[in-house]
Image (tube, rainbow, N blue to C red; front, side, top):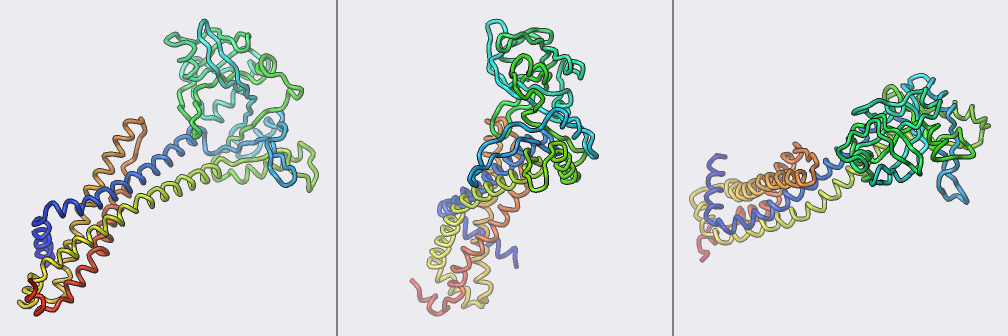
Length: 405
């Protein structure tokens, strides 16, 4: 019975090829748009995950406290976490390591080349904290940190802009007129979530930055600190211990606000992912408007078809065809049109998403959601848009239908 219904539905659709094609086109465009939007949303979420994975999700960021004036939050207060605080944090249970950063910006000069770079004064542990890998050369040591050696580890962008095809290891470049020797090159990371180049970076001992590039009347304070936790499930516990330790070391009495702030990377990741999910759903919802237009097109075509085939319906009923058969016949035509349009829309959406990914050099996933969306749209749109014409056909009086001219 099902085979016979589908066969007759195909014959009816094939009889009006151009009209059927134009009707399917709305579904094709609608499904393709939804598939593209879902792929875009998943790509954004994957890029977010990739960026955070490059930083490490089991991080706690210790930053200066926010200033509050008249109930309005302002910028950051002065740095309050000292180098010794970071050493103490490193000894807490479930802490893998900890580090800090003193950052500044400078114009790097080598020969006739110059380029603006971000300079991070830090400790050897920062490589582990930030998931940085040395591609060639070596890292500076604790001994270099204590003695303030003018050593630098540079990112790939700095290599390209200053040294070109030369091997920079052992070469000397200048920052604010002072010489620094390249001892290592970092493995490439690419852009971060904000589109900033993570490879435009120079790492050197914190004492070197303080002595040669960024003096301070508070030389033992870090701009920002990082705690790398052993596992993500211990983040909350380590955060509580870190807060207690820092309050104790800073001699903060009960009721006094923290002069620092703790930010869990896992919470930041979750918030950004939620924003990405909401954005992708919003885009998919907007794209779904074209599906509504497509379903109206199917309904319109099926209503016209019922009118054109009134005598055929009357003849079928006169020969004993039950109302259920008549209704299923028109529903099958509607669902078949929607299914074919959804299938080609899914193919078109996947192909266009892959072409876009190739053009922008981004890995766009082919999701199982594309298949689920296409199948769901085919069934739902087909049934909804075919129900009214099918019921109209079913309710036709056979005598009146046979008289129809």
